[in-house]
Image 1: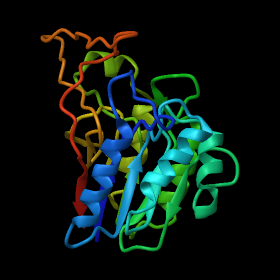
Image 2 (image 1 turned 30 degrees about the vertical axis):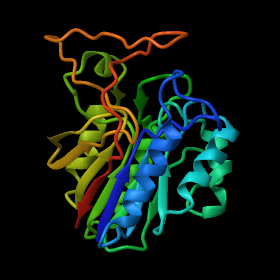
Image 3 (image 1 turned 180 degrees about the vertical axis):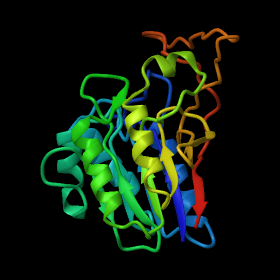
Length: 252
């Protein structure tokens, strides 16, 4: 099974640019075209959060129009820029999102089981898995101990070394690690949020982040101070790297 991951697409309303600089729609269109040219074609594409920039219905409609040409099923999860209810409404016809509550779900139709976790905390940059979400994850994983599993979540559950991102990181890391350790069928945890690729070991499995489809976060450890790229109206909140049509592929 071949899984394509894209993330942090940050789609805005039609005709607008992110921070007055970045054409996120054009970048995602290029990524869609690149995925459709792959041979073999991925079995699924997962989009790991920050689908749009302000969580508005018009942005989700724009996103859906851009994703429509993809030649494989698409599964999405929310990030901190998303709005849970507008996102639910935008993707409800696809049938995999719950009708209420957190946007956690499981996909059983493939050799690799997909367990999707909603780490969104409304109004916050950082993410979390509260007790309710942790219990849901543990229950779902307990139900299929022998099924190889891919876990999706927007916020990475590890310290990245990038000060600003770790300052607004993931709450519930230790409790989540205990759950992951109890479920060795987890083959990989796929995350977004960082706008760059980082991989590490976590609780007995592999966890990694994918680059954004449009703009990347230049590594800024404590030894390398963060700076800003200014637009005509305001500074951005992180260093912007080169724009590219990027995805990660996982073969199981």
